[in-house]
Length: 345
Image (tube, rainbow, N blue to C red):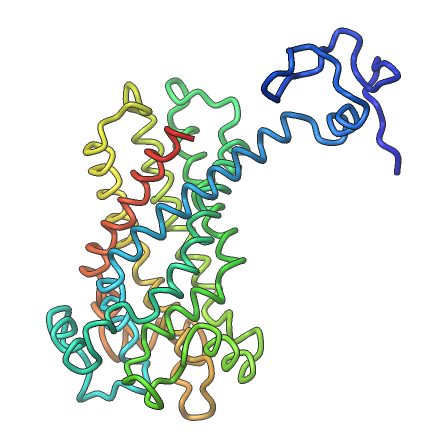
């Protein structure tokens, strides 16, 4: 299919009054480029190029900030995951279950070694880099869709709703791409066997391969439906409230980093607690993959909700929630660090 020139364009494909833009050092504005560059300009307009560069900056800034913060809070995250899924783990019998955060922190180094606090951290960084980077990158694209032409001063509620929608859509979109990595991260963190044959998986690749051979692609997406529900709720608050609060400040771009961190910390804590029951259910469902027959604890997502509430009580949905609040400090740091990085890009 041939590319059509815009109406009124000259034989070169350029509008009569249009000057060729200059994007390279040493090239005068309005000077005429060679024929190859002319065709490149027609096929790839500069506004598209600028959008691609902006997208790449968002992707890299979000990913780097995420990798740093996740490594810092990896021990807290592993404690949180163990408390969440221990009732659904075949390796952790009833008499060996952790009684709480302190008990978990004390026993892990004794039973598995100090370095086991970072068990699966590399997989988590690999998973988290595209997850967070895609969240931030897509968030800005969705903001253009939901917030185009909206005045945050005169249309506050529309501005707020647009931020909620863009945050939720960004989280759900990125989840579709990286869910198998999130799944593997959970299974690796829940593996409490000592080094060697006692471990269920040897690493990220071994986990993905074993589950795929056992249950197919469906096994890698176990708990996906409830994950989408939870991620939309979490990301809507995570991005929506944060962006709205920052947008209400007199000079958002020059806000002191301490104020930005306080806003981000509050947002991550509230968003995390609100969506935590969904996170508990989805991780319990993840523990089902690779099981057969009587080893399967839950028939489905609704059955998981029902059994947790009936057998363990409502508080079971919030096991590890306090460690999640501490872990949220890393999430708050990501938001602030991301904004700081963008100031220099």
